[in-house]
Image (cartoon, rainbow, N blue to C red; front, side, top):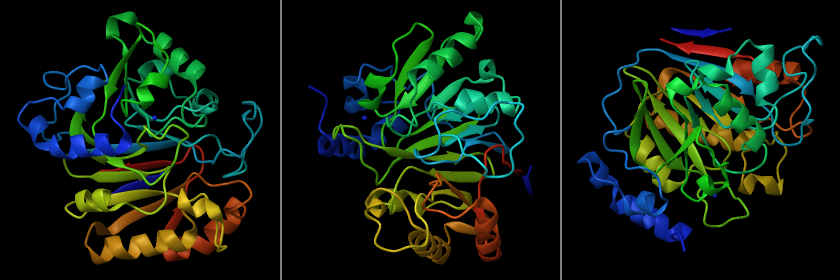
Length: 319
């Protein structure tokens, strides 16, 4: 049921190491790429185990691209759906945050999310609208010290840009290797996105529960072959696409973000490959302020074809 309410290996070397090392983790090993990053071995900490969590509750704490205002409206200002959009971020089961940009804390206040409840942050990449040091530190420092440090997951190169603090524990993610958080299996997959630091591998995330699974696919353009080779073995209940660009053709941003025709093509391939379940939800986020029409117009045009434009505060529960 669904309810709505970046002396380390080069990018090429890193990908080669991680693909070779995939079997190592499955037998309790620890890849050389992650070890080189100075992170802790996953064995005995968050080594992959079969998912046990039966519910996936997704709360969108930002659905915008970087061209929305950096200052979020005050709490006393009423907002209609999509009137404004914070930096793209999503909360899973009230505890796992994907990305932490400069508006996330303000959106949390508006929707009564307690930052102290967050146990883990998954980082997709280090662009400023996805990685904001001050907000990360506030979340880490809000937690009771007895609960231990905030666990921060991401590409080994990207973790260098995460603030150092005894309240934050950095954990490197290796492409294609699954780790566990609170009964969920989490897999970082290669994203078709660019950052200035060419050593950093941008990621999207596959989140798997005992019976439900979701692909959080932003930021990024076309799915890459390595990512498809993982997804083709899966059955998804929802996919959340980067929908930065609108319907117009020829925008150069399509080499790092999607336009609507690209989303439709990928949806068709995922359906044909039986990766998307018949009732899977297709959700759009990372929506650009001037490249997409107003939210109400997006809903009117896209909902009839099964495309759901997300808005800040939107909740989706998969059980």
